[in-house]
Image (tube, rainbow, N blue to C red; front, side, top):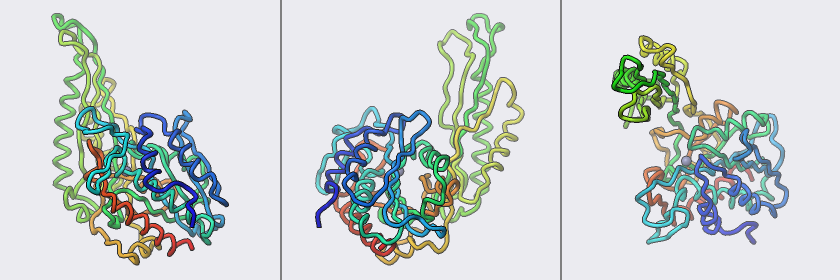
Length: 383
Ligand SMILES: [Zn+2]
């Protein structure tokens, strides 16, 4: 059988060669995938852009139209990757290097390796599927699944199957649920003055420091309390609050008039985000006002566990083990469910521990195994 698009390794090399750090454009990568799929017969492709038209999701449909039962399968991956750290890489992050069964490069593990497999499997399956098969390549997964939110704004859910396989690196295990992430900024306003004349200024940093102490109190309370599905997250069986960014001030002899603190809360599936926000506001209430404001920046919903998924049975049938634990990190799966009613499982090659760091790597043989596994899965679900 001739391949309609290049071999997986060739596609992986080309995808890694394009810097798709979430802060930049991903359009070159979208174009590349489109060029691979161009010659595949009987498919339909659509770009779903962000508001600036700087980034796009690419969605491709094969097989019959999605019916009212929303039967079929979405195979989903994100095209963006995390920034390349300034130091620590032992080679060019945007060139795939291979040493003793390991492939190194930014995104090989999270998740351009799976992206390449997904494109190949979709292309091979496209002309013979008897149920709807959708390939979904998203943008901005790493910064809050804004790509999926854009899809939800621009597409009717009825054109998408109800089940999705998201190929995040799970070392080939089935992961059925994950935490969410609620992000906030505290902005503090003061008044500039020469530090020799402190009576003329208002220090913007001091109230933020008090807020940081209060947030640390709340963090300890969360750790004591646990929450829904806590037993599925044995490493951190609670809501994880992290004060992650603090910045402000301009010079050592100037009373600072501006400072910001960024913090996030990783939510257990089943947690009410509104209740958590209310709790944070009440805990900070004595400090909040005109000069210290709390804003919610983003919310990546947790992914709850879905019962009776066909994709779960198919994965089980090919021998993929079920991870009894949830993923402590977020994926597009939370947003897909919250906004489009799509029920997902995570399953993909590579270990998340090897992602998001210098010399990110994945085992070459794991990629090959996953490629044939994905073909078997599609054979069971959409043929
Ligand atoms: Zn990822």
